[in-house]
Image (cartoon, rainbow, N blue to C red; front, side):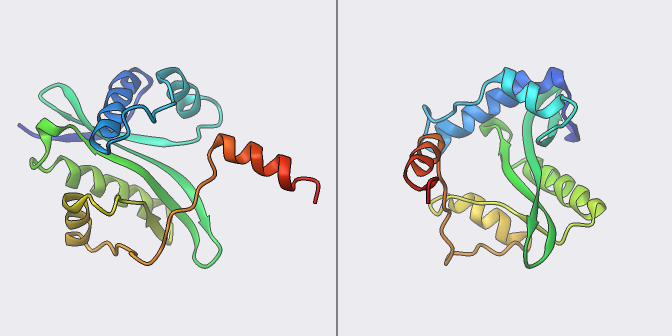
Length: 162
C-alpha cells in the first residue's frame, strides 16, 4: 500500500472538508469550523484561488491533506503558510504526514520562498516531535495573535475613526 500525493481537485473538497472536521474534533474544537465545502470550492478553485491544497491517497481514498497559501515576511521575503496538515487517525504512522510535508516543502522550494511557517498546539506532542524530527524549529517564545470576525468588527467600531 503506497501513499500518493497530488494537488487537490474540486471533487476532493468533500473529503478535505471531512478531514478539517476530524482535525477540529482532535484539537478539541468540534464546533469551531465555520468554513463550508462550498466555500472551499469557491476559494480554492476560482479565478483567484486563495489557497493550494495537496491530498494524500491510499487504497483509493483520501487519508490526508495539506492546505497552504502565500505570505510575505518583511524580514525574509516570500513565504508559504501551511495552514493545516491533516492525516486521518487510521493512517497515522504510515508515512502519510511525511509525504505531505515533503510535497509542501518541494512546492515551496520550487516557488523560491525563504520560509515555510505554521502553528502547532503546545499540547500536541506527537506533531511537535514530528516537525522537530524533520528539522523544523518550534518557536515557543512566540504567541499567535488573531482577531476573529467579531473582533474585526469591534476594532473597526472602536478605532476606525482615529
